[in-house]
Length: 111
Image 1: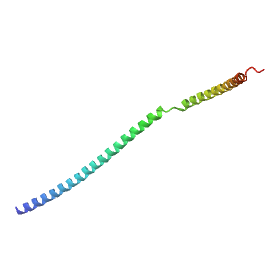
Image 2: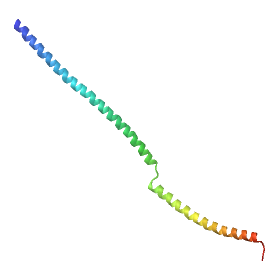
Image 3: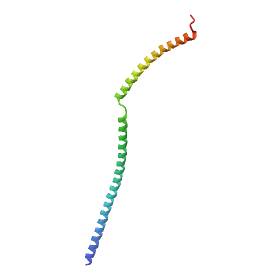
Image 4: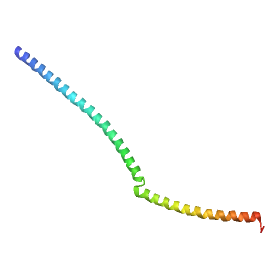
């Protein structure tokens, strides 16, 4: 009977040791998993913020005028420049006429 108690005591000791090792391994992996989950969550949050920034930039770029739009504006500006040149030439002639009329009115009919 004494031997049986010694063997039983040794078996309980080995089982306790095994239980402690299993508990330690489980705690190691559970803690590691939690830390990894937290890191994945923080990376996921950063990716979500980055995704929102990219979407905002895409919307801004889509709202910008394209090459064809800029070309159309350039053509209209050229046309307006030509029209302004023609108006300038007409105004020069009008200025000459006005100057002649002023001179005539200031000098009077001195002929």
